[in-house]
Length: 133
Length: 382
Image (tube, rainbow over all chains, first blue to last red; front, side, top):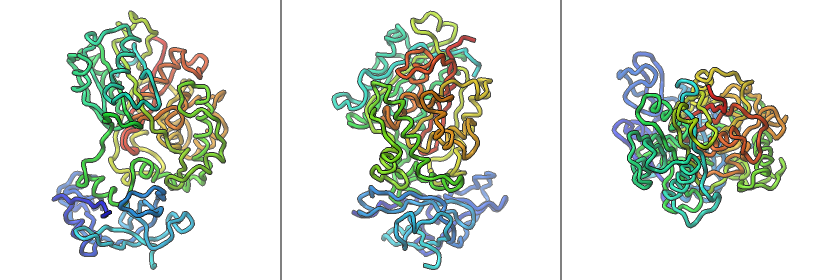
């Protein structure tokens, strides 16, 4: 079964275009300098419409996760992580941790991770792997 | 709201509970409503306000033959009914209506004519774009995501997620209507089938069919009803985020804190005044977050509070005395059942009755830490 994929909206298109181009694009407020996610054309902290898109480092730490033992049909048959990464720029992002065993022993909280884009045709998803893997 | 100006004069659940394959969701609403009207000694035509979630208030009013002057379709997940109580109290005080019927019904297990809470809006919604692509399969693999961060922050272990399930089963054992009544041990919980690490099956709520309803009116009128009135003393509500990944703090719910603080402030009570507590437990970490975010325990201390049997039968703060979503029932939007148990306790008719309970709090969650509602009840008039 094909992976269930997002449907971009006008306000999020730049993020998904970035993933396709191998770049993790966040937004930052031009007035209060706060970096934020998910995308929207105004700052969720101060309400300013003056915001800019920038390429994030793609680095972060594993913040929390579960290992789902009942995978959705499009996710294969083996238990897999559903994780939240805390990005170096501050925002949190849901993702999957790949490139390591899907076990509590391998998935250590606070371990450094880096983005690894996985291409699914129309969409590339920002997955994360242990840094330097 | 103003304290004790509005009271619950009718409260009942569906005739059956658990697995009800021959009743549709809308009829579960109606069954609960009819039982509650009977409890209050009223007819549908006596109702001039309706509120529900999972079904539109239009469907509810039409189906029951009610012509309301007040309709509330607030739908923020399982605590929607707490918000309905809060809004109804304000509406009654403002003179928008006199007598409000709040219903819940959900064919969570059998899925007969199933409605229920529908979060999100397909794969272009926020959650559809930024959570669903990573494989979550409903609440068991979403609501649970913050828990490992909570455990690490406070140096806790999986055992601390297991104790709430063990102790709530002790309460359920005293409740003939509870779905799961057999005692369970810590090892039973830890060794149960893994659903989404670190959560085993017994740390996850049931999926059952049922419903419940409440009728509210002014405290002034409440004295003329057959049941002992249960007064609304304080109320709170808030929402934070439709995406669990975007919670500000993985160790504490902002919606819980805001809602709880508001309810305590309105009620003008301290924690020591609370005789009985219900915290919506979709999963076994919820009582931990709830006890801390409502201020009954300091951050990180709720696990020891539960393990040391403060919330168990005989403890100083009886919690989830119907057995909770983990052992009593969970249709999908459990908040109504938490309030039903508060009402039973304050009427003095609960299967596991807390002696002389005067103040009870029902605290609900909606979505995955997305929303919250808190109601403080009292059986003493103002």
